[in-house]
Image (cartoon, rainbow, N blue to C red; front, top):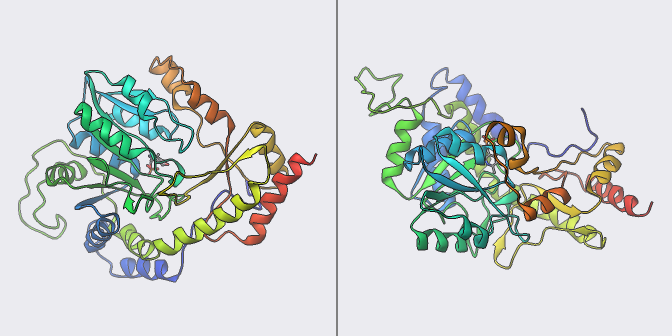
Length: 373
Ligand SMILES: Cc1ncc(COP(=O)(O)O)c(C=O)c1O
């Protein structure tokens, strides 16, 4: 369906075109090449991690990071049900069991108290997300993980650039994943990355990402024998897309500033409506607004009301444990009352860096008119 006001648009400019053009025109290195390495170095520098390895999606990054940390059959990984399904599927990819925990209602991230109750002697890792660009209670989760001797792996797919007291998300855990899918803060169309300070994890990830091959050079232009030493995949980000990553990363601060300004416009206006809760990050939490999500009781009616005005909205997220896959195929009978309550009332509004002031006004007018009926 085509909307007058879609949920998001991709932010791009001439530098993206130039980067991609050059990559194409070179007539070589469309798969593996120097753009990948430059993009990875740029991400590490920006986030503040020692190592970064790009992947062809956030989902393959999740798969690879769990393998690299040695998580497998018999292990449990605590995840939120209030997330995109890949967060919960990742433990299944490696033969482990995702255990759903509750979220708290301030950041919509994992509740440290509830997570603590679900830790068993099988728990290998906690894998929280930073919902919509707002950091979760990651410091508390880190303390808990350290205390109980388990891993903390951040799913930072939605929160590139978000921080707490100046420290970027993705640097609190043992490793973190990022996503560069088209609706994320910066995008390569599809893409992802793992950031970590561990050389050992980084070296394992390199093997997992590319067929388990010992790559001491560019496979496609080297005549050297390269041995295969473990089971691996092709999870590589194409060099041609890494060109986009580089040009997108160059403008990330501008992109985030524009998102924040647009979010502020919405919040300033919508906070006057008593039936609506706007996102309010805790003090010191820097929210980058990958999505702008409000809460309201009459959520489903509002979706219809705005759709009649050709304004797209969407529910991010319906709980994962309620999907047919988890209930019927995986046999989950989980009950999570906070997750359910939040999920029943959230609504993500259209918001992106280049959204026009007039479009933001139309969204607010649409919402206001709903309560004036
Ligand atoms: C929290 C979360 N985790 C993982 C992913 C998966 O990332 P990708 O779409 O790049 O595979 C997403 C993307 O939508 C996400 O929002």
